[in-house]
Length: 222
Ligand code: ADP
Image (cartoon, rainbow, N blue to C red):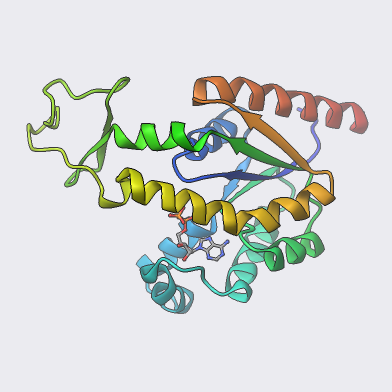
């Protein structure tokens, strides 16, 4: 099928549903998913120089230096070549956003806008089976027996950083960090907001947006 390359940045707070939406974009539109967090973790696992350098920062939960991440992302963009892609977790600073501008032309910034109180509520109901990583959600994906994993019957726990006060803090930190990046993209008229309380509300908007955009892109090419 004839279609233009589309380059998107996806932004969304922790637990905003960004992971699910990203996966659907990949499945439905065939975008390549570029996530520096994933690449860094893979490098760490494989014990590469990059992985070793990044580890100290990642373990402390702080950002890896811009030059390192920029090198990694630009390398990945080059490898991807003539395909549509979606950047997830990049840029996180204005330096990264500016640099990205010199590497490639971004077509759109998709900003997932979920109210903080909804996110805090959602995370409050999240229970995890630590050995397997299975996640349950009170209200829509409950365990068969309260507090117990469906497969093993072992106990479920809540993550320390899923406590409401901690989540509120993480959301605040995210907002503060991303504000200048969002401003940068607003000045370039690239931001589209997708507002909703659930992925079920947000996904149809994202889907329509990308359908329209890729349609226009095809019309341009024809
Ligand atoms: P999280 O959403 O928990 O931050 P990520 O997978 O996006 O998870 O990132 C994990 C870690 O990788 C971050 O804490 C940071 O150290 C590093 N990292 C990821 N993306 C970037 C980036 N764009 N700039 C700097 N560091 C990054």
